[in-house]
Length: 486
Figure (cartoon, rainbow, N blue to C red):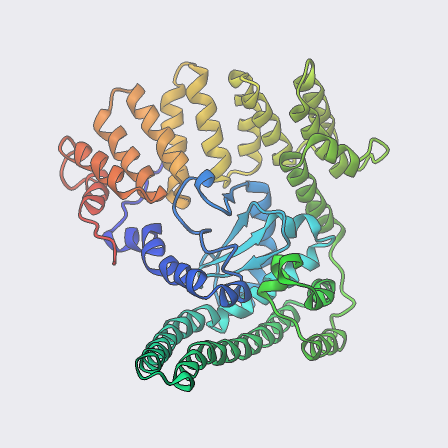
């Protein structure tokens, strides 16, 4: 197996989520705290904690990982990113576990899509349209402009507050009621002017993202019908209260004029009539079924996918629902359903992955190894499946299982760093008696989770026993000497 590439200090810093917590998120959090209306408009209320490097349970909007879903989202997005001149591998598609229909960007490196969006979108083209629009925000530099604007307007608001308070104090001292009232006017009027200006700028950004997104769709010979369908769906929400609006409607303000322009551009495109391929539609429906099976209550799944529906996606969803319904025979019934799926599509890796996952959840770890091996054989680049197989091998206690687990995990971490892989690798090293290496992996896991104190504690413990200059020693040295930006 090829050993992991050593990370330089620059690479670690670029990939370090602590920078996002210390630099990006405080600015957004300030906007949420001080400017709730601005935050709601920009979609920050629901998303400001999304990048916090904490366990999912500590986040308001947890991120989830899944190979099948990430692959299809990447297939949706890659042509758009290429058409936008953003290259390949530069931007990651992130999945937010949230029932609301929403998608957003916080920087130029990630596009966040809610599970609610994926489940509510009837066609791939609807999701593709949303991604095209968010790509328009990235190429337009809108989030950077928004952060700069918020920073500038906070200064303007502070000056207005100082002036207003000064006038009110002067009015109180002199007994001049008019002067005190003028002070209140400055306080409230100053913020109102800033709000109106920001609203106007935000509307311009949304319109620009529409046009850019349609340019990318045309460049890839795809219809803009999905984008139009999405915005038409939320057009009616412009006239109801913010409390009742979907997150997407709040964070993507839509005027009648903007919708009319968008409709004209979409309908006059030479690719308006183009439709998704049958295979892509099937993959989309399988994704929605998987999300339903894993995230919704079993009875909800059975209602959504009744027994009369014998399509592949419906059978997929019901197999998962049967397992999570619990009770005697639940695992056997679910496995029988999955085996039926495999009989129909034996080369679909994610049916094998789900079979292994259900076996692991039921405590039959040894039995999970074989289907996970087959899943990885069919999708050899699936880092997450590689990590899952490594976890199953660790618990199987078979001959050579720990050594194979180490090799799998080290390979997975080359392209996809995640704290679970580091923790499993630490567990393998502990079992091999390699305590310093294990501590070094725990340090990396804590670092990715954003727990710098624990990361540095384990890094110091490991570094004293590691050979100086090795990749592990250098990575631990980076953690020990890391100083978050204030």
